[in-house]
Image (tube, rainbow, N blue to C red; front, side, top):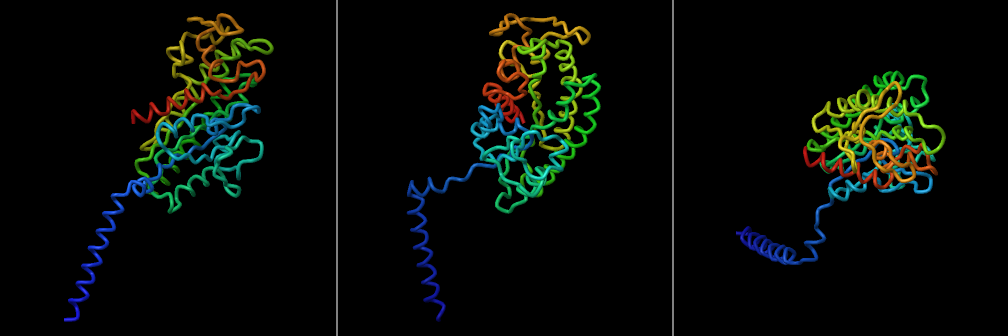
Length: 321
C-alpha cells in the first residue's frame, strides 16, 4: 500500500519533467546554445603547415585556415617550421624562431608525433577528430639544391623519407582508430616546385639546369615516395601540389618539358611582370610563392595565393574520398 503514493510522486515528477523538456525544446535560445561543437582538424609538419610566409608576414592562416573554414572544423596546429621527417620523431618541442604557429598546441617536453598521438588519446577528444593534414619532407631535401648532383642527393634522401612518413601515417592511423576516429582522413601534401624559379633568377645568375633537375626530382622521386607512404593506410590520401595546374598551366610543372642537360624549355611561354616571356610552370611558382620576389628571393614558402591554392586542392581531395 505504501508504494502507491510513491508511484504517484514518480508519475507526477515524470509529467513535470516532460513539461519542462517541452518548454526547453520550444526555446530558440536554448536550441542555439546546444549546437554541437565542430569536429577537430589536426595540422602537423613543417612551416607550410603553419602558413609561414616571410619574416614580414610571419605565420598566416595558410592552407589550414582555408580548409578549416570550408570544412567547418576546429583547427589544432602542431606544426613547426624547419621540421624534417626525422625531427618529427626526435625534436623536443618547437624551438624559438622556427615559425611555430602562434595558436599551436604547446608540447615543450615531447616531440611532435608523440604530442599529436597524446592529444588524440585524450578522453575529451574521443571520436571528435575528422581530419589530419601533414606537410613534411621538403626540409629533408633542401640541402640538395646546393649539392654537386641534385638528383643523386634527392635519391639518397628518399629512403629516410619513405620510412619515416610510412611510420608516421601508421602511428596516426593506430591512434585515430583507438580513439574512435575510424572515419578520419590523413591527408599528406607536397609542395610547389619553387626551384623552377632558378630558371629566371631575379637575383644573380639563372640556373636553368637546376630548374630542370627539380622537375625530375619532384615528379619521379619525391612525390611518388610521399604518395605511396600517405596512401599506405586506410583513410590516407595524397595531394600532389607540384603537378596541380594553376592559372594558365594545365599540368603544373609538367606543362612543357625541360632538358636535363641544358635546362632548355620546350613548351608554352607566358608574360610574367618584370621578366617578360617565361615558361608557364615558372610563372606558376613565381605567382603562388615568394621564391621569385627580388626582395625575398629563394624564400621557398607559398604566398597567400599559394596557400589558398593548396587549401582548395585539399578540400577537393576530401570531396572525392
